[in-house]
Image 1 (tube, rainbow, N blue to C red):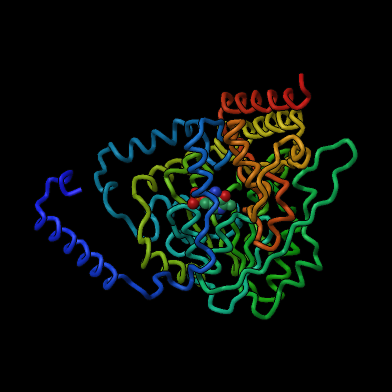
Image 2: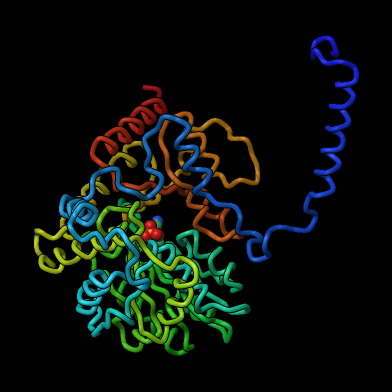
Length: 455
Ligand code: PMP
């Protein structure tokens, strides 16, 4: 050993002594108190980290995470290019913290019309870093220790940790599914709230309800009747509504997106949340917003001001210009919102056909760019997956990524812990993908079903 290291005996012992001293020092200075803040307890696991990593590791067709793999429209890209290379060099600097003036003005004008409400750009609109930050501001600003927040299952997964990090208690109520008519596929419209069950969740501690229509992951578009039921309960119990409407333009088959803030008694107690990522197919820009009465938004502004402070100026300017164009084309065939919904409906139908042909049972979504599919029939086709605490859908998808090269997201991730196991026969696919991607997915599914029948 000594001969190999080329050290003299003296040097060898000196090195050993230094090493021993160093490890004594490390032990002595190691932190022994808990480092994690209590509010992070139980919220430190995240589905996206694991599945995004898996999708990046194996060659695959990715129908997992919700982002378009095609270009945003030219007018949107051109607006961004103009913002960063045009004459107004101030677009590279900070702008107004609560929203770039051009954007808040256009948002107020656009949504004021839809909500039937005169919106003041300075007090009724707050621009955030994506809808994620908008949600975070709602919970941090308006939910206290001991408050209950009603969440409708299945739900966009960050609602639960966000409520908990604010010190609140999530209270869950499930959408209950009714069997499809004979010979028909199930629709997301077959999933409904039970009015009595919903009413039973409202207590003296209820501070807010989170509504997500169109809903991720199910694709359900809540009807006017369902919205009225929720609105009546909010008014009766003096409860706030955080209305996550990021998929507002992705509604199919002539269904209508209802804005709960426009229902009687709701403007004053609702925060409406939107996202340019979904609206203009630019998820990477991370521009989102909240709309609501000043008495609520002023508290969100406090959180935003003291945490994020500001959303990138050039991206805000580009979104402002994009809204200007949509305002001029509203409801016309030239409108991106109209075109996107038409294209997505075709993509939805294509994916539904591919899944049916392969033997999965898709639940046809009325909105969003997601659909859930039942994989029960596949249990016997897939080699025994090692049993563990992990829900079946999660194990199934890991197997599917590695063996079939197809990525989806487990639906159990959109349920609270006690309910996960009841929904682990469902997986979520995203269809905001270009034709080549949907074709590649169709091919994989076709090969799979041929293999199953032994052809
Ligand atoms: N709400 C829902 C229902 C979502 O699906 C998403 C994104 N997947 C968000 C909010 C967050 O949107 P953004 O990318 O604008 O932060």
